[in-house]
Length: 153
Image (tube, rainbow, N blue to C red; front, side, top):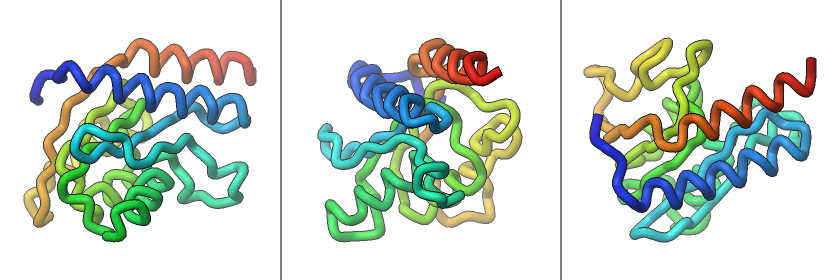
């Protein structure tokens, strides 16, 4: 996997801010931002509880908004930054949106579909490839999740 570039840390901090906002709403703290040409065009935190929508993961919400912003469901020039490794649903949406590059923080051993449980983005049967960089500010992402769940126990 490619090494992070200097901008990756700035954009991941924006995703972490969305994750913190999600936690304040009582949602699992996952955040995502979509970047095109070095500018954030959408940002979101998890919203399934508040929206009563099982598909309202941060990635899906951010992809929907990014598509509205650029007025195209194909996000071929976009990079997505997510605090935690995307699940199978979100990895599938990343493929459908034709995201060029995914940068994520921490691996998700229970539901990660980029490399932990599944390798959806690497599937040779699919017609789109996504460049992947992982581990960017992973400790901060893990600390957010652990703190959130510790407080709920």
